[in-house]
Image (tube, rainbow, N blue to C red; front, side):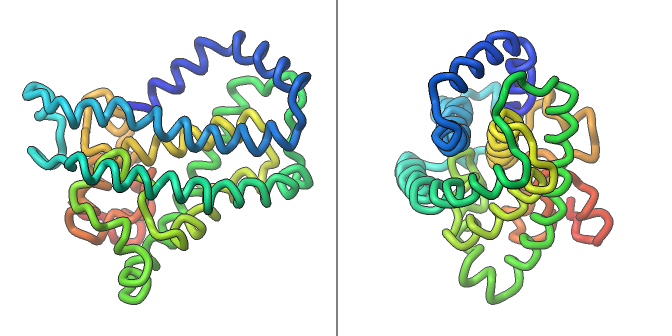
Amino acid sequence: MLVELTTLCLVLSFGYIEKTWIWLCENTSEYLMTVCGMFVSLVVGYLAGCVPYVVLDRLRLPFLDRYKVQKGRYANKADYVMVTMKIMGLFFIIMLPMIAMSTPIFRWLGMTRDPPLPDWTTVAIQIIFFFIVEDYMNYWIHRWLHTPWAYKAIHSVHHEYSAPFSVAATYAHPLEVILLGIPTFTGPALVGPHLFTLWIWLLMRQYEAIDIHSGYEFPWNINRYFPFYAGTAQHDLHHFRYSGNFASVFTWCDQLYGTKVR
């Protein structure tokens, strides 16, 4: 739901975005714009993206229960507070330093912030490429995280909830956050994209993670129209069974390597 709505809003508001971007370039240093922009894409985007699902979980409207993958299973208020506090710690202690340290590397690899903004075709193609690279690498790291030692020492934190909810999308052991950050930044490192594209990529990656952990499968979700897109139900089943369906974005790897479960 979030990925689809974000794409529509970005396309419709592109003219305004470009004017704002020019103003930012004229009034902000490149390093500050890079670090703060990427961090805001992660934090504000994450929190804002969780709001619709948190509202649905708290209201528990009967006519929406048909879209709940695991019927009647909701996190309580204490879970929301605890997970939110821990995730904010991960953002500031793990993710912010990672962004700050990687910024000079991206600049060296060809990333620029200079106007004009790239056209939407370029942005779309690069982000699709980033999703493909991230999904393939994430699949193998995720499979390793389900080996006995890695699961017990690292990945079990993320699996504390067999019925996932939106806020818990990034709830994980700090080492897992670092490991899964590698696939997220590999695609951009290979391409050297415009900074704007990198902002959008981080935002879309967050929203994709929130969507598949939301616990809701709506009829307008992408996977209803593109069967190779995994969607909420597939990842929800991974949490319910604690195994299988290791890929988070597409179904290809699980089908190819025999780990898809239904």
